[in-house]
Length: 314
Image 1 (cartoon, one colour):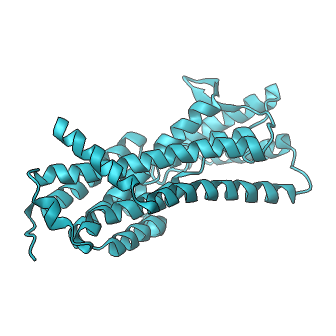
Image 2 (cartoon, rainbow, N blue to C red):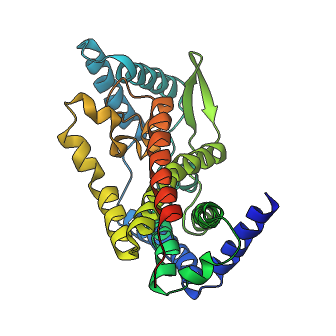
Image 3 (cartoon, one colour):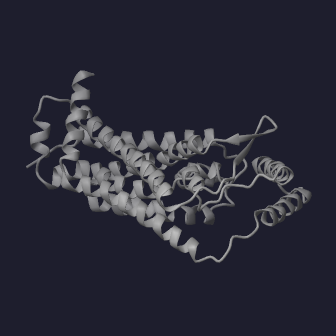
């Protein structure tokens, strides 16, 4: 175990010794500040915000109309009933919802997952493939270390990099929220045990960060597998971004079929459970976690099997 931890530490230090790694971390900070500035600018172009009470009343009537049709089942029905309960509570007690472009709204729902995925995929795709392209793989494998330990150290370095990017993104989001946006009050509410409870913006922000990290893990692992098997970082990056950007299209095309419940694309974005947008009433968060775990294990088995059995020739 000590030997493995040493390998992980060495791989982590080697990763951060590269200039490109620091550039990616800096790029993430710049992108988040830039996006916050754009949101602030676009918000300033609006002459006035609509009255939240009128908007909420309209949403309440729509949810009641949907429930009256008796077409909603399972989770869809439960979500609609909870929305009705929350909307009525807000109107009765004059509690405004969070504004998405307020300081609290930015912290409540941090949008850092997509940027972290793109940057982590680049690292995951090249961390093994680069050893082949640079000709350092033979020197690496002549060391008296088992191949699976080398593979594990590289994989753990990728996950740590993705986790660190998520934290950097969250901290940067908080800083940008305080710099660009004002506090507009409002309160996030949820239904727990049949009662309305207040939701902490900080707790929910960290929870959304955790859900987003699931997408980072699965996409980075796929890139890690492709890069390890085909020794091509370009192919790994291309295929990973392809499944990331086209996944929703595939799910929409196959929505009517039972197989959609078992597709990777259906479960990659775990934040859908917080937005109440779930494709199928049979799909729950535990079910999604199980499906993702199965795909994750398959990707890792392929990666380790090919790497440990591959004959490294001149």
